Image 1 (tube, rainbow, N blue to C red):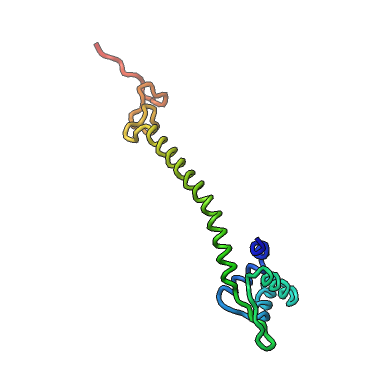
Image 2 (tube, one colour):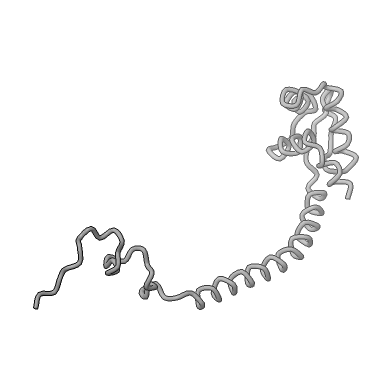
Amino acid sequence: MEALDALGDPVRRRMVQLLAHGESTAGELARAVGDEFSISQPAASRHLRVLREAELVTSEVDGSRRIYRLQRAAFDELDDWLREVRGFWDHKLDALETEVARGIRARRLQAPPDDDPPHDDPTDDDPPDDDPTDDDPPKKESD
């Protein structure tokens, strides 16, 4: 798809972003991308030609100016293609989401309940009788 090739360049993507806000002259686009990407006016013109040849933009001569606009039909075609690709992945990602949810549910069912802590719980307040830190000597039983 020639349109995707044309949009593969960051300068041309930026030009498309600028044109998404409305028409613009070649000079305005060249200044904007020239400042941002440090490219010359002739280089900016070459990028605009690539966008025109990919039929992503149209241009109209108005006196000494060339006015550029986005070509909606080309973006509709891109959108259709992307929707098809997303449809393939949406199905796969939905299936993955289902499997992840099943795994979470299975782990939850296998886990012991929170209200029945195991006997060797370190938060247990009752120390065992044979606590080695107990400094009190054992009590003698009186007869």
